[in-house]
Structure formats: C-alpha cells, structure tokens
Image (cartoon, rainbow, N blue to C red):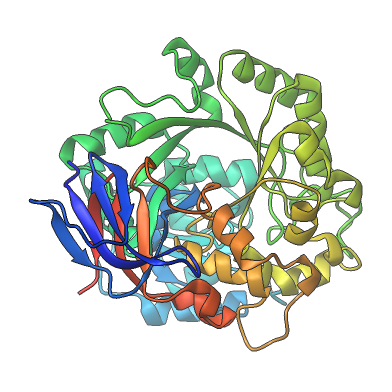
Length: 485
C-alpha cells in the first residue's frame, strides 16, 4: 500500500528548483517551496538530490536474469577452451548429479569452436549447460543432451533448437524462482527502476499473478504474451495495456512477442548482405507469410505486436508487416537498419525498443561481421532525428538490469577506455532519460508517484559516470521500494 510521503528539499528535475514534493494515494499531490509539511506524512530528507521519473526497463527476461545472477559468468572468456577452463575453476562443490549451468559466453570472435567433447573432457559424465550472452546459443555436454533425450553432433544448439532445449532443461521450483525474481527486482529498484516489460518465454501473467499474492512487487510489470499463448490470451479477453485483474494496476497485459530472426553474436541476424566468410545472410525465423497473419490476429483482438528484428533484412520484413497490417507496435532491438527505414518508425507508429548497452558490447563482432555497415548499426541518433520513439531496455540477462548502463552507453557509445564507436549515433542525455522512463520527461502534480531520487543532477555528471549514478530513493505508486542508508 502507498503511504503519504513528503520528499523534502529535492531538485525538481535537471536544473530545476529545490522543492518539497508531497505524495498521497499513490500520486504526486503537491509541489511546493513553502516547506509546509502535511500532518502525519512521512518525511524523506532529499539531501538536495534530483527527483526524476522512475526508470522503466523496456525489455527484460525476469526469470533468466534472476537465475543468471546466481550462475557462473563466462563473459570474459576469449575462446571455447578458455571458457571451459574458467568453468572448472569457478565451479562450486555440488552434487555430481546436479546440472552445471553458466552464462554469458560470446563466441562470435573465438578462433576455436564450442563442442560437447570439450565439456566431456573437462567434466566427465557431468551434465553441463552453457548459455551464450545473447541467449540464442546453448552449449550442452553429452550428459546434458541425454538428460533432455537428445542427440546432437556438436552439442551446440542455436535459435529455435536452442529455445526448445532450454525449455526442457531442469529448472528450480516455482517457489525458488519467485524468491530469486523478488531479489532481482529489489536490486532493480535500488537502481531507480519502477517498471519492467517481461519478455520471459512463459505465461508471464500467471507467473506474476502468483508472485503478487506473496508480496507486492518492487516494480510494475508489463506481462508479455509469448507466441504460443496468443489463442489463450484472446480467449481470456486480454488486451495490451489493460490491468491484470486483481493486481491493483501493478501488472498490465503486455504486447505479443514474435521472432523474425536471430542475433548478431550467433551470426543468425537476418541481413540483406552475407556475413563475410560465412556464406550465409542469417536465419529467417518467421517469414512474412507466417508473420503477417499472426500480427493481424493479435491486433484485431487488441493485442499489440512486439517483433524481434536485429538484421537489416529482418527489420525491413517487420516494418513491411506493420505497414500491411496497419497497426502500430514495437520492434525489439532494431540493431541494423537501412537508412531508408529510419523514417518508417514514425510513419507507421512503431516504437524502436532498443538496448544501447549492446552497442559497446557488440562493437568488435559488428566490425567483423557487419563490416562497411556499422555506420547504420545501433543507429539511435539517426532514429531519433527521424522522429522515432525510442524506449531503452537491457534485454537482461544479455546486459544487466540497470537502465543507467543503457543511458550511459546511449550517450557515450563506449563502455571502456576506447573512443566512442560511431559517435554520430549517440543521443543527448535528456533524450536518453526520456527513453529510459517510457516517455516521461519530468514530474508534475497528478502524476502517478513512480519516481527516483538520485544524488546528483545527471546533467552535471561526467557522461562516463552516469553508469554508477547513486540512487537515494525509489518510489513505486507512492510506496518506497528503495531508500539508501
């Protein structure tokens, strides 16, 4: 439940005046400079921090992120051999029969290739499942393949085969997963997050309704409808944007997720031009003749499509489908576009749901496989200039569930000591903050009290330091979900 709060001595937005902000019944009730405090209200000393709209991570896989926070990371492995060595070194004592899991490997630039035999030699007889950073590749040991009743020549499964095998692996109990998710969402709230869009490949509405019965979540959740669940969603009368019954507005019905292609690191993003040296243009997972009818069925029933498209050909197909169906919606990722496509997002009413932290993460693999095309890769500046609406997400666990990471990457186009990668595609800080707050640009009387209080005015912080912005407090519907010590 919300409580009456006064956020005292806070700066109202970047460069704004120092004010007191009173919250009542989950909304901003008053913004004053006379320091008149309501009787009975709880007063939070704002310490001169800057009050901003709460952050919304527009693309999260909640269960996978929650689990990844507890798994071995192979993100810094520079080869398949090194990944296996790190796995063995970092493996904690466990039951020999327990499934060994690790996450985060990036094999796009490796000189050697993953193979089930590498895992078998290192951990004989152990069931091992390693997930790539982009979640589009699953590397399994012989014992893990046997566990799910499969045979495979290399143990390296990609795209649809990867997704299906992932769904067949043993998982923690619902009670354990719910506890992990709750912990992860509290950590997100500590970074100023007040909402997520959950793209978990599951019945997210059922899962989040169950979690809500245990305790109010630390974030609002837009519950995405997976491809397999469309007929059931229509039968239940779900419509995108509607509140989930009994959730008090904390849960809403999300969009309908469809995949047109794969990913860059797995070299399956569907492109107009071939990948150098690979004799492939990527994978077309859902051709137009299948994509368009699904989008028509969804939109005719009030369910907005969210179409995964990374390669430039996949984005052309997705935009053409939106034009044919005549509905708005979202393209998830939009990583490589032809210049002629930039203006189509505004024209068609399609949101570009982007993950700026991926640009510095993927710059090296893009330079290899999208050579001569990178000027139009992760083209946030060009999209913004063309009038597109941007929304920033993390795609956690692909990147951490921390919008400040995405904001910093959008502004700087780097995350290390190297110069900015295609700095012409950077966007201004104010645009990045809006994109990370689902379009909110300031705090007004009458607003829903989804807010964050940060220690410094973001406009006065060195761009590289945005990534570590201290968050003093986070408020969800007038309820404190984080208060720094």
